[in-house]
Length: 216
Image (cartoon, rainbow, N blue to C red; front, side):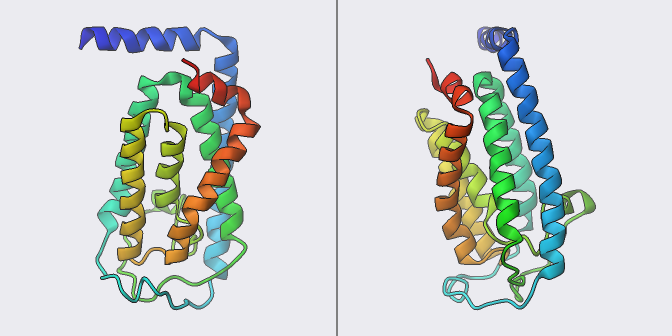
């Protein structure tokens, strides 16, 4: 255990001692912060413009269950998992921050374009004020609970264990928001394709960060 901790500390010292890594991480944090501010305003706008609900093939088939625990606390656990992974692989930090920021920005833009109303038979979702900063009933397209874990799977694709972990979490997230009637099936289905595009956009926008992260 001591050897493992010493190894992690050594890796952090190696990366944080580089000015380029420090500057890139700081810019990543700032970009992520800016994206969350945009997201907050997009959520409020989408909520205020939400129209009528639509029918959905898969929602007509799937059972309805309250999935508050996975939707809220599952998201917190997921963030903790990503934190642990990045702490063990600090060289990925700048690219993870920036790619997540791009994800949030593109999702924010997507949610304000079409204003489909929330699903009428959705079990009550108990969101406190803090969680309403990030999500509400109107921010449907596309599913963040599906897309963000899939984005992490793409980023850590070379690590078979992490890839499998994040793909599993993506599937769990997608299924839970469908069963909980928090998303339409198109929100979940499209999340994989859009996220794949976001990953490649981020690879090109932040090429140096990505190459730094994946180099041996």
